[in-house]
Image (cartoon, rainbow, N blue to C red; front, side):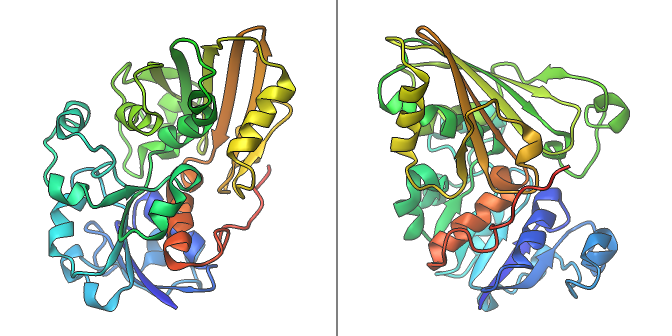
Length: 336
């Protein structure tokens, strides 16, 4: 059994990790932290876990790092960099924050609003998007889990850009559910504000944009990226608009994606239009497309707490530990 700890277990990402790992046959959840709920039973905060996990939240200062095989860091941006230098040599780490996703310190500071605290540690992190970086993840000690928007957009654009099909800029319209804003309510995430509304935020400045550009190798094809707050709880619906160098048929577009993702367990090509309803509570990314001459729209949908966060983190754990990649993640989406 792989003994894991979860730092930040009271947030939605941490709670989703617990929910997934409880059904993982090769993992024991040995420790969970929350600074706001020290010594409180996990099941008191998340009653859905009653009878499944007999643990109390600990303080981060009480991290039993020497007793763990792998540590998940599900903390707000800026906190992981403070913890990494204190960890013992050899402990594997998967970080769900943005602290180690961006390689350029100046770009990181520009988009996150504070300096990169440990560039020398950042260089030891592997970008954990398995579908494009699996072999690096397999041998990594430190993995930086991708952002939810970044996952949806990179998977949708990677084959097209690598094949050189895209002529000009790509315009991205990405909508997210309220759970993406985390467990602490704010004026913009409060239910009466979001439940019957749709509004943009962070125009041109979302922190996942440089991550997308870095993974895709832009700027030959610049990405114009806009995020929206949508009135559902779980899901990312990302639309990508572009012009191709030449017209491609539906079969040719589908075949390109199949060639780049020939046997990916968590990517499903959708002949019709994707729908967030059919990926909820799963690690799947559904991708579909529509073309009109040289103009192409590609849609990608995923669950922001699963493939956009905790599910992808467990997928990375499986790769790092040599388990079948679908272990603990082989559940069909929930509908309705």
